[in-house]
Image 1 (cartoon, rainbow, N blue to C red):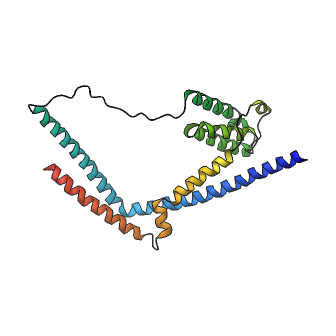
Image 2: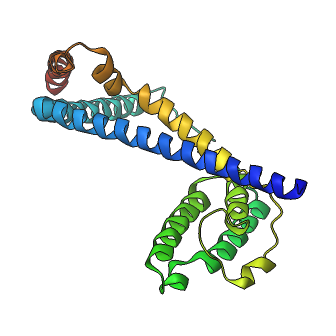
Image 3: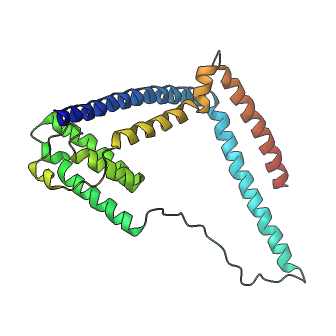
Length: 239
């Protein structure tokens, strides 16, 4: 009886987390839609200024590069110029935080999960195919962009039967070594993403300005000033 009660509590916790996740997703989606719509509106008002500023900036960078090369050529013609020797350029490589062992384990977990949840295995049921499609989409996303720990959690989530998909009997032979804390991780991830979305400059304008469209004039002033400065710099550089 006690065991049955514990299982019920565990299921209830999963359902509660799922509901919280759906609410977070909905709120995040609404904020992102509002932000994108407002950004598109702003661009429609200042697109010409943005394009002009970009063109001038590219020209300014070319002028700076040409000046640098000219100064170098002048130095080379000098009597005391010496060609640098033994100069080593240190190229910073992107750090791969995953060891070969971790990468291997990620690949194993990914392939094992994909073998059991690929949508093609559920072609007889439209509902199950839709669920499997979403599971594989998330599986690919975690495999490509997130940590081994995140993939282990999702792997456990799948094979402990918490994805509302009916797995084949062969799935019961899959060994799960990780605790199923995927939903908790997903909730925390969405909370962070939601916090970033709420702190986005444009969303703050939408929610904090009495008249958000007043920001159009601020943007115009910014770009007009930037264009003016870039024109001076490029004009001097072209002489």
